[in-house]
Amino acid sequence: MASTCEQVEQGKTSWPELVGETGECAATIIKNENPLVTTRIIAVGTIIPMIYICDRVLIWINDERITVSTPTIG
Image 1 (spheres, one colour):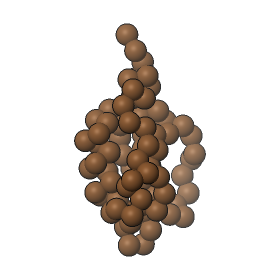
Image 2 (tube, rainbow, N blue to C red; image 1 turned 90 degrees about the vertical axis):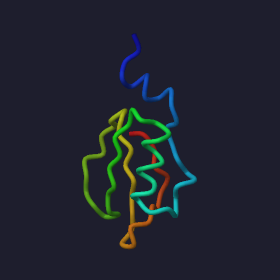
Image 3 (spheres, rainbow, N blue to C red; image 1 turned 30 degrees about the vertical axis):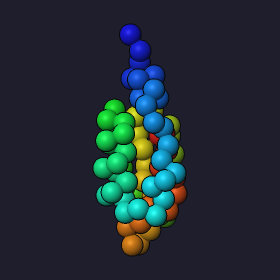
């Protein structure tokens, strides 16, 4: 049986096409394309521990709630 990480990584792992979309829109699309991940919308400048979590996708947004970098698993 495959581990959770192996199962997650069999799906899509990054979404460069979502840069410029709202964070909420990006989260919805990511969940539809890879339902095994958990999305987190994070404001640019927020300090968080940068540890790799294989089923998490961080969506970095600006003050206008627009995705500013490629959401990627980790």
